[in-house]
Image (cartoon, rainbow, N blue to C red; front, side, top):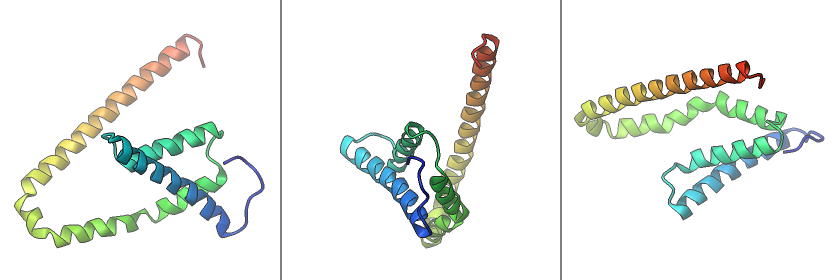
Length: 133
């Protein structure tokens, strides 16, 4: 979205939400058609990132819409909680595997995040030392 006159009222939210949902839909369709081993919403998020990068950054419209969505993010956990309650017997039977997956997934995520941060810090130090601010 290019900067321009701000639409009034709900149009701002609707316009930016449409952009977000189109990117998610495009990601879902791309994964479905190509069979890529990536979740559709993740690919959609990358498409949104590319769009925002190409258009010069996050517009105020998209920022406000994203803030609204994030402010209500907890509502998205309700269906997951209901699913756990519906399948409680299965959760009880598989608790060890679920716990192991949660612990290992968390450790792997923390390790990858720490290594990525350390790598980025080294890269930034090298760029600073070579004068490429």
